[in-house]
Image (tube, rainbow, N blue to C red; front, side, top):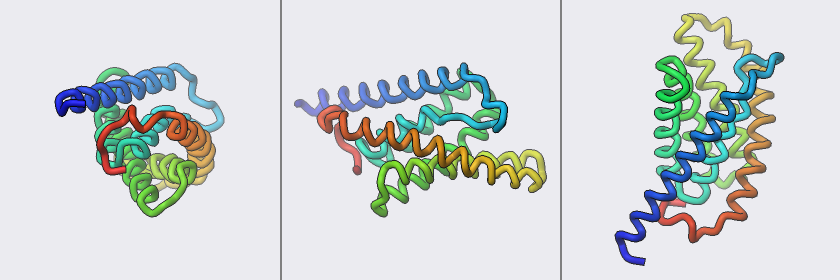
Length: 173
């Protein structure tokens, strides 16, 4: 493959993953919030970030997540949604990158990502509301983060096994 063909392929893969993350975000926005746990989301877009992390590399996963957060906030949210998503998404991705580099398995990395996403969002809520009183809610979100992280980790792990490496080029896997 020529150098230009490789660059075009890389851009196409980035575009495909970002579009998939946007579709997952839209689908998730259509699902009513689980009444027992306000604020709980399945985290479908994390399948894309997790796959990018394992198939492309940490910088690429972070870049895809940042672009996804920005686009989702513009299309479906607003400034507040951007702030919460950015805090949760960046903390989550950073934790997943660190754990992947230290050799943890995909499902464990995903669980830690789900939990740290919730921590990032609660920290922003505490700052915005100027109170630590909502910190107790982390105990609830800890369990929901573990549950959704497990499911997303299993899906992401299977995707990483089934998607050919030839689809992805470059990166620091």
